[in-house]
Image (cartoon, rainbow, N blue to C red):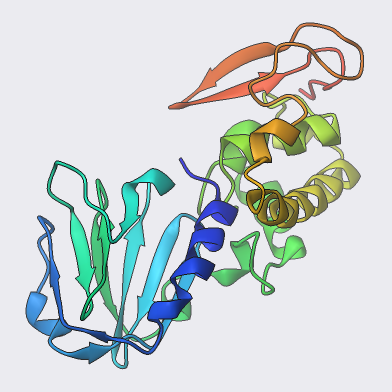
Length: 242
């Protein structure tokens, strides 16, 4: 699962295609290609792990499972799932499924949950965590894109470490002040990642993600499997709330 700020960083590089005319689309995805006959690309946005390509009457949402599966003017040996073609350029998406929506993104996506958007509403998310996901672990909830869009394994690991919360902690047992602090740290760290991406130093500057020793107490970092991702935990620094 990619981190939302990684998509936002790439989106900023794609802005040169804003206002350009799509000559055609291609790929293995089952989509009505006739929709894209000489249409103007109005804007490019992101939501969590989705790219959003906006046109006059509709938009295309493409969920990305890895930033490496998005190539500009380059191709892999396998067929792309979906591609935008411009006069002399192309954007190729691999292992990604596009979905066409009529209307605008806010009709379908709740921007209050996106950690990288100005519309992010920490109070709304806090209420969601405490009322609808109280019985879940905070580690699982952080990766739930319906709760916190844009949080990936790196952000989850680093923010929980900074907030001194063990990922297996039950949400209902975590003090409210701790949860509020965690949400603030999550937003702040997402912004920090955008800066670190300019020098390709996100993982280098991570405190415990993919590290073996805790930088604070020098104890061994424990690696836990959660779904398809890993979480790095310092059992001494991070309290388990049950």
